[in-house]
Amino acid sequence: MLRTAPTSWTCDHERVLRRLGPRIAAFAGAALLVGVLLVLTKAWYDSRLPGTYSVMSYGYADYGGGAAAPHAGHGGAGQGLSVTDLHGPKAGPPDARFELTALSATIRLASGRAVEALTFNGTSPGPELRVTQGDLVEVNLVNEDIEQGVTIHWHGVDVPNAEDGVAGVTQDAVIPGERYTYRFRAEQVGTFWYHTHQVSSKEVRRGLFGPLVIEPRELPAGGLDMTIAAHTFDGIPTLNADDTVQRRAVRPGTPVRLRLIDTDSAEQRFTLSGAPFRVLAIDGTDLTEPTPLENTALVVGAGGRMDVAFTMPAGLVQLSLGETSAGVAFSPDGEAFALAIVPGTDFDPLTYGRAATTPFGAASEYDRRFELTITRKPGFFDGSPGLQWAINGGIYPDVPVFVVEEGDLVEVTIANDTKAVHPMHLHGHHVLVLSRDGKAASGSPWWSDTLNVQPGERYVVAFRADNPGIWMDHCHNLGHAAEGLTMHVAYAGVTTPFRVGDVQHNEPE
Ligand code: C2O
Ligand code: CU
Image (cartoon, rainbow, N blue to C red; front, side, top):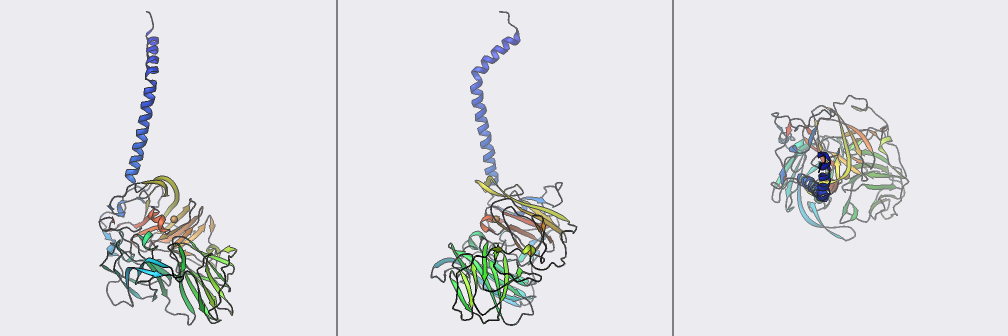
């Protein structure tokens, strides 16, 4: 009976353990499972976007000053500048006035195919708006029957914030029966476009967009100047809603300018054969001393624009949209057309044209430096599990808000660590491309509002914070934006009274 206590304890302990072991293991396993479930449930729960919310309460402030920056709410308390204060000229007669009525309509492609579209004034693309630099532009938007509401965003035009047309950020969506007036001065010369920024992943896809051209005061006389919008309707690639090769009679010697606009969510590969051509402008900004190109494809990212020019030769010139059946054939008799050709190389703006002085560059002192790294990771987005887009490691709304102050010189490094192309669009500003994958831009200054960032690419861009407001910065593959590839650049102290969500039905993406 003489046993030492420890032995006895050990024996009992072992016996007890032997008996209880499986139960403890089962219990621990169950606890672990419950724990994992709780974590997942919380992740799911937290990811659900509330019915209505302010973009100001979302994300975390990133001051571009490095790791020490606090995750405080942005919008300096008490400074009280609202986006509604940042509007265009209210008084005075406009130089150009348009009325755009949003309505559902059946449009017919050239092949005869009917498309149930959402349109401005019954057509898609909507009416081409052509104005002159310096014009005070007034656009009256009427929503006839677009149930989910509509707005108009002037893509690439750096308008005052209140005229930017983003539902839930700069205005409420315009519901059927309502009207809304936009007024802004057209300061930039170039090729732009307009589109709804309410449920845009569906409404733009279905046709609520149109071209906008701001012409210089001194127009080159004569010539053919044509906007060409590439868009996919019901899966059918089109140019200006035409899914065939359009034929155009053009006299030899005529200067031709084609304003290519990608209104789609995918990048478009344009080819131009039959004459040497030059790329005059990218995203509405002229290039410096563009040189002639041949056998070179023009890849335009979703939302982006490229203006190309050629002199009409004696033979056929053909613009093709990839290898689709859509194209435009220019010939002296307006009859000829050819099959699309597939050029050997893609146009690269990084080295095209002549370098020129820019207001800032790689060597400038930057007030803020931001990283915008796009990855894909498993998680929840708005309550749905899956592989999600992430910005700097977080899934929307856990994304940064880049906070700037007026006058700041801002550098942003955009890295695409995914397998998809992301055309990144910053509202209200144009960015200057400084480098790509460490290679400095060496051609004409390249200003962009929609930068097509290919898988694996890393761009360093810069802009001057000279347009106060709360601005969207998102992927213009609008499906990606709707999946959370969306964030904001906010000026400190600016607030918005508008909310995203079910109260006003505001749904920018
Ligand atoms: Cu062309 Cu935020 O859009
Ligand atoms: Cu994208």
